[in-house]
Image (tube, rainbow, N blue to C red; front, side, top):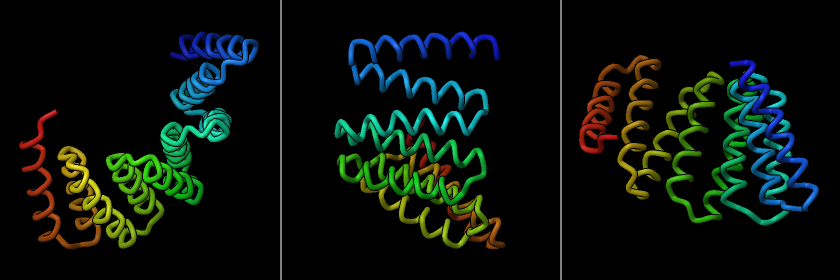
Length: 184
């Protein structure tokens, strides 16, 4: 995989140089994001964050709110993998806000759900539970049954960790029912 990734990095750097040479900001943004993604695949979280950050700056400078929301999420994921909880929470909250401004209800719900995941990883299960319930309500409003199911299952897991098996069973049952109603 390392050899394949190195080749991909070379191609993306070449694409970035070409895009910059002809002042194609859209192509440059794609190349920057691809570089970030490749470093993330390699587990090089710092470089991934650097390239995603550059792509984010470019998208923000061009007023591309939906792209910025996605990139904030990618940065949040990279920081989560690296165990940088404060940075991850900041990026997921920024993703939430950008999706809200873009009018993407599903994106808003997903960003809130990821915020809850980071809160749990950071050792704040009660706060994670509140965020998960908020994300669940947003997923219902967005009519995304699969996301709603995933959130119900995450809520069940959190209740289990908090020592409430009855609530965990209830939410697990709801989540599994939703998955049956909304197959992939």
